[in-house]
Length: 317
Image 1 (cartoon, rainbow, N blue to C red):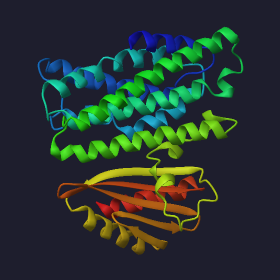
Image 2: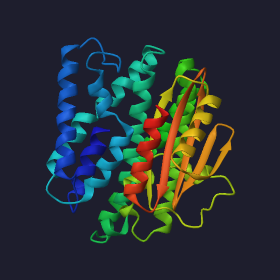
Image 3: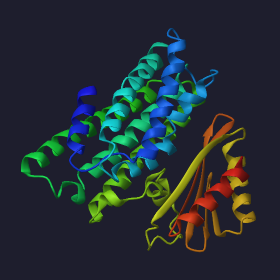
C-alpha cells in the first residue's frame, strides 16, 4: 500500500494536488491522533476512549468526499499530499488486525475505516481516469495510470469482499451486523453510481461530493416518484436511534409532513417525499430494538438540499 501511495503522488504531480486548506487541516488531525496513540502504545484507540473523538473525526465518511473533491484544484500541495498518505496508510491495517484479533471490540472503527478508504479510492480513480486529467498524458503515462487505478480498484474491491465475508461469518457483534450490511450495500451502490456518472459524463471528474454521498436515493425512489431529471446535488447524513425501525419510519413520515413535504410515501421502513424540485428519502434499517437511519436530500439547489438535510437530521434526533 505504501508503494501504491508513493506511485500515486508521483503521477498526480503532473497536474493536480490537494487544496491546502483541506489538506492542512487533515494533516493536523492526523498528527493529533498519532500523538494520542503514542501515549497508549499497548492499546489501539477506540471511539469510546477519552481520545476517541480524534479517530472519529479522522475517519468520518462524510468528511472524506469533500476533501477528495477539493484535492484536484491546484499544483501547490503535492508534497503535503505525500505526507498525508504516508501518515494515514499504516492506520487502517492496525484496526483491521485488531478487529480480527479481538472480536466484537473494534466493529465501529473498522467499518468507518473501510468506508473511508473505499470512497477515497473510488473517487480518486474516477478523477485519475477522467478526460481532463489524462488529456496532457502521453501513451506511456496513460498506461501507467491505467495500471495504477486497476491496482487501487483491486485493493478496494478486495477490502469490500473481505467485509462481506466477515459479515457472513458472524465476525461483527449482533449490535453492528445490520449496520455493517447496510454500510456494505451503501458502498456498492456508491460505486455503481460513480461508474454510471463516469460513463455518461464528458467530465466525470467534475462530480460534486454531494452527488456521491450515500447514493441509495436514486436506487430506492418508488416508482411513482419522478426521476426524469437527475438532481445535481445530493446531501446526506446518518444517525442511530433508540427505537424500532417501524417507529423510526413513522417519525420520519411525521418530520417530512411537519416540514411541508408533498407526495409523502412510506414503503415499509423507507419514507420518501418531495419539496419543490428536491427529493427526500429517510431510510430506517432495523438493528435489534434500534434503528440505523440514512437521510438524503437530492435536488438542483445546493443550499436547499443542505438546509433540508439539516432540518430533517435535527428533527429525527
